[in-house]
Image (tube, rainbow, N blue to C red; front, side, top):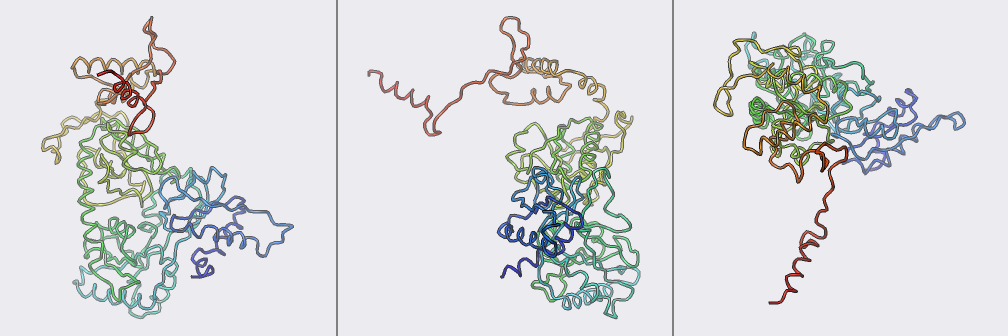
Length: 518
C-alpha cells in the first residue's frame, strides 16, 4: 500500500483545517500501538497540510509531536501525557471511546475499512422484511436500528442516502445510527451529564440514534454492522436488555457476509459475560473494604463519580480507598490484598473488565450502586455512563428500622446491612492526627499479638490488623530512652546483594564452612 493510500485513512486535510480553525500552536498526535509505524509519515503530512496555502512570512508555526504511549487505555484521549508537553490540542487516531475531555480540545480520527454500500443496504432491507413478517402486527418492532463499527463511520452518509433512495423503507423503518461528534470541546465544569439519551438520542458506545417513529429502545430490533470483537461485545451488552424482546442483536459483517445473520458471533460470549457480571455483583455485596480504581484522569466527570462512590460506600458501612496506578494489571492490584472488591472508574470501553486473572472482583460504578444499596436488584441491564451512578441516601443517614437481611448467594447465609453504623466513628477518626493514628495502629498490633480480636475504627488500623505480613519493624520509630514517637523514618536495613543463584552472604558462608578443619 502506498503512503498516499495509507494517509487517506488518517483524514489529514480535515485535521489540518481543525487545527487552523482552533489556532492551536502545540498539537499532540495520539496513535495506537499498531499504527506507530505510520507516526512519522502522519506528522509530516499534517505539518505539510498546515503549511499549504500559507505564506511563510505571516505563518504562525505549529509544533506537532507524537504520543507514543498512553497513561491509561489507548481508546481514551491521553490528556496527562499531552500536558507534559503543554499541548493545547490532541488528535486521537484509531478506536476511541469518544468520552468528553476535561481540559484539552480533541479530535477523533477513526480507521477505514472497505464496505459495499449497495450490498449492505440490500441485506438490511431484506432483514427488515423478515423481521416484520415474523411477528404479529402488534408485536412487530417499530424500527430497525443499525449500529456500525467505528471503522465504517466514513460510509454512514452513503448508507443513509442509499436507504432513502429505496421505496421499501417506508417512514424510515431502517435507521442508521450516527457517530458522535468527532470534535470534542473540554467540559471540565460540566460535571456528569446524562449523555445516554441527550436530546432524544440514545447512545451506544461511539454511536447514537433517534428513530423517525420515536420508538423506545425495547420497541426496536438491532443489527451490528461490523466484525466480531470487543466493540461488538460492548454494544451487545449495552443493548442486551432492550434487544432481547426481538431476538437480540443481529450481525452484518461487510468483509464476508452476504446477508444479515440473526445469530451473531458474539451472542454466546455476551451470555457468559452477563452471568459473570451477576456473579461479580454477588461477590461485591460480601465485601467490607472497597478499592476505587481511577482508570482515567481525563474523562469529564470522573471526580464527581469518585466522590459519589465514596459517599455510597460510607453510607453502606464499608470502607473505601482510592487508587491511581495507571494501566491496571493483576500485579499492581495484587499489592492490595486487604481490598475485597475494586470499582473501575474509566471510560465505557474499558469499564467492563472480566477480571479472571485478578485476585479480587472488578465491577463498574453502576454495579457498585446495586451491590452497596440495600434491597437493590440487578435486572441484567449494563450501564457504563457516569450518569447511571446515583447515591440513594444522603451522607449520615441511619439505617431504616425493620430493614430485612438479604440472603447471600456466595456464603449461603443471611447478610445484614451495616449502613449507618460507622457514621460517628468515621467522624471521630477523621479528626485524629497522623501520630494518633499510628499509636492506635500499634495498639491494634499489640492486641492481635495477644490473641485478641482488634477493635478498629479507622482504615489504617483495619489494614494493619488484617495484614498477615507487616514487615520487619511495623509502626513508627520510637526514641530508645523515652519511648516517644520520633519524626525520623524507620532505619533502612541492608538487604542481600549479588545474584539470585548465589547471594554474597550465602557465598561467604559457604567459604567459611569449607575452611573449617574436618
